View 1 (cartoon, rainbow, N blue to C red):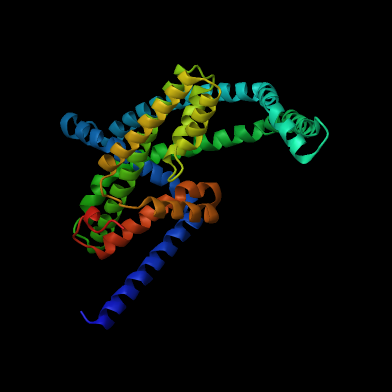
View 2 (cartoon, one colour; view 1 turned 60 degrees about the vertical axis):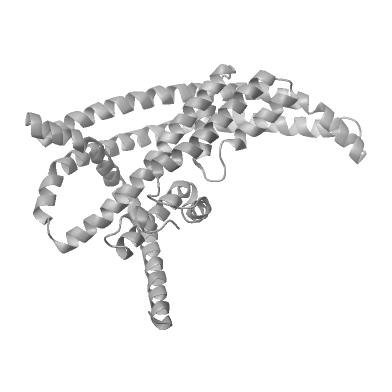
Length: 358
């Protein structure tokens, strides 16, 4: 290949990558809200389809009935688990809000020596820094009482409307998942051999494999990290073990952030306070979580995606700039989609995990 041909190929690849990225951005910006319920329905269908097919082949249970029964069980189990979890989280969150004055008083008490140091350092009258802190803490407490709680009460009706809308969407997802499970075999049989369908199916299959591998890996690791953190917090008798444990697990899923953002300062503070047992338990949890992520992530994910942490962080930053808070998820997911489509188009006949890792 001549240098001119090589340059033309590189320009073609770059142009294609830009076009794919732009299309993914447009889909996220203008179409995601419309297709997201059906993407979720396809995901549910993907979960129940193997069992549905076995029921159909061995027991002659119609796919419509089999998929409906399996989805009802899935909804029941998942809904019960979510209700129990939300109930515990709400109770812990209410407890934190009620105890905020106590925590602020504890913190204010520990700041006495620091305030005295700053008074002496800056030449202020004794108690000036402490008075400033007390005044602002009091303002914060008053804001919590006067604004936060009334706003929660005023938005109760909005929350009820949101819940009704959510239930409606879940019903649509349920029906769509049943229909997808029922129609996929006939759809494949009808369009089998069609060149356009085969190409589209190859890309979506590669995309599904990469996306499912990524989501499955993150969810499994998050679940294990959450169990470890919650267990550690229960051992040290923390009143908000579930709430903090889940929060730490979510932080662990973020690239280049991890659980160290919470646990390391907590461990240091515990050591300073002489709470060696608490520090030992938290350090053990931190160590276990780090080992599990380092060992499990390569084994579960393999080389299906091959996206480096730096690229994931860049995608997350771009996602936040483009889509706000949702960009935490949309950024990395968009990167996975872009890379998977790109490799599926330009590395035909080659498994996606062998098409390169950068």
